[in-house]
Length: 396
Image 1 (cartoon, one colour):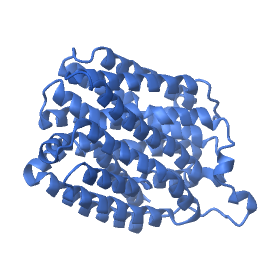
Image 2 (cartoon, helix red, strand yellow; image 1 turned 30 degrees about the horizontal axis):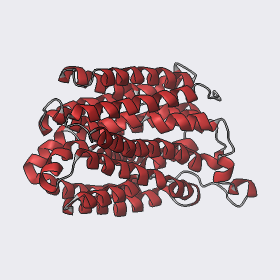
Image 3 (spheres, rainbow, N blue to C red; image 1 turned 180 degrees about the horizontal axis):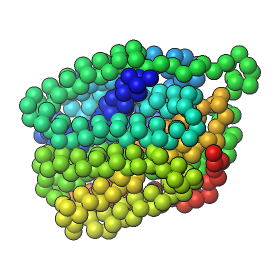
């Protein structure tokens, strides 16, 4: 059990690394293959959208096939193959293809953990276990900051990607060997053969899905791509400086996920936990938006840290939604929530790229584009927050 949990955390760390590494890769990709800020954002958006689209088949695989084998195969072929394509990329489409493959590979990793916890662990331990995997797994965010910039300086960005490809395959093999599948669901019973249509009839789930769609998007988008460009174009930081700032933002996301995990033992309402944290994250985001272009690097860093910490309520959002689901729909239910979370991040990342490009059409001042992006995140998070206020919950 312990070995399995360790490799689940390592695998999720890898997934976190892949969704965060573009911020550090961005300056060298711009210099060597001409990748612009909006194209970096598009590449990250592709990762999120492909990841999200995979949640439907992943949910079916979790409920009907061996979860560990399904996750291992997808991670090895998609993740390992995508890293190889990234290493050989000669332009934007090479990066787009690589990120799509990596999105496929990473898509089952967290859901494998949550499915096992939902099926095997006591109800009151789900939030803690989910927070543990999300929190410690977010160490991948740290690896995609200063350590990645060091590796790039030693062996180049292509060499770093080749190492990643090998590591991905090794981790996939370890998942297959050390993780144990939970007890299988009996699908011979007609009641247990229900699927997505029945899931969508659970009306109390919809406000949770709305919150999931927007809660992660600002932190993911800023950490994954926009922070790097903003700190470079507006504050004049190099890759090393960007790596340091994103390192602390990544650290705050780890701390936030770990703090949110056991919080439902203190505050019995998952809804209240999510609302309080999201409100504070929104306040930090509004401050970043209103002060864009006038703030020091220290102020920007503090706000990014705040957004990272308080925007890490993902585990409790999943926990809230999970308690609304029947056992037979657990796999597809948690992957549906994850689809909205990752899909929302992907759509808003693609949308933010268009907003940035549109804002820059009539000016050469980069701050105009970044201010528009921050404003978009403020509006989206505000809408999700208001919808989530109407949500119901089942407390246990």
